[in-house]
Length: 81
Image (cartoon, rainbow, N blue to C red; front, side, top):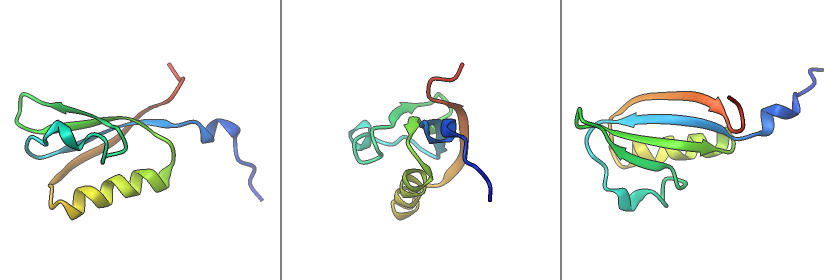
């Protein structure tokens, strides 16, 4: 049996890129991730995501909206340097 490190329960900060500019009114629907329009014409969704279930929920919303997913990156754990 593997022990789970309690630090694994802190929210991770993610950056999710999608093709095109997504209207900022969708922030609440995307778990309050910050929506930033990039100069290359794409959108960056960023912020803390509390667990993998929420991450997969966000990714399903992207799929269901027929948005083209460019990348998903975990940039840090909340509270980490």
